[in-house]
Image 1: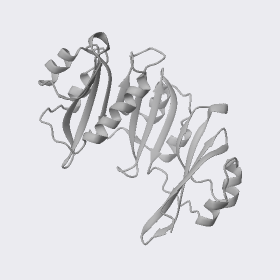
Image 2: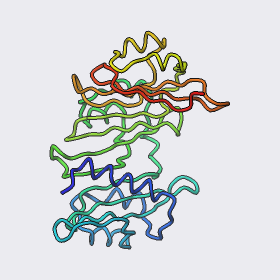
Image 3: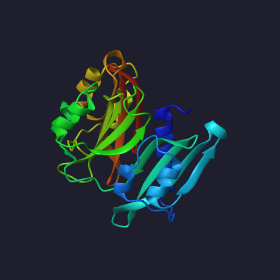
Image 4: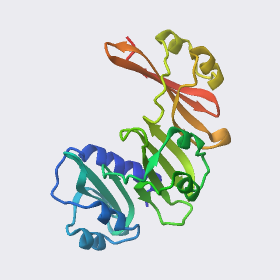
Length: 259
């Protein structure tokens, strides 16, 4: 059987590739929520009313792996896409992109910053006052390998999102896009000066700000953080510089848009 996290990533790639397609197999958000890991494909088909669009298939017998896709109501003209992964005829993962999140599933930057890697899903829910929108699930509920990705929208902007990945019920990674609206600038010369192996403190001291921490995963020596800055680009388009820190030390850097 495919590893759960790899299967989730594979399904997301399928969703991204097919977002512009228009299959006739439709699903509602309520139906998506009702469907549970462990269901057979027949159960899913009976609930939704159609067999879905088979976008991928591999293997035979008990190793047969199928990814089935449906579309649903999203925002405006943009359709939501739901994908279900079956192994041996049994549902092992499900993911969705585009269903409208419930109003209660809101988050502020302060709340996002408060939440720490290792927190339980229950603790996150208690802080935020809502369970969030579960956009992906893989594995058997209650097992140490069960993985769920939960998404919240920004309290200040509906275009801002925060995603939390829980593995075995504990927070293993978090990502935010648009919650931190601070201005963190960097010049091309500063970017060039920064070297692999620098500490985050060294980068902060050179640039003059701590940057926008867009993602974090792991703890202690396994802690990984990606920090972004913007800089002068071409016309109105800003350059973006990203730095990856592992245990506080710079292990990667990339930029796009510098003149």
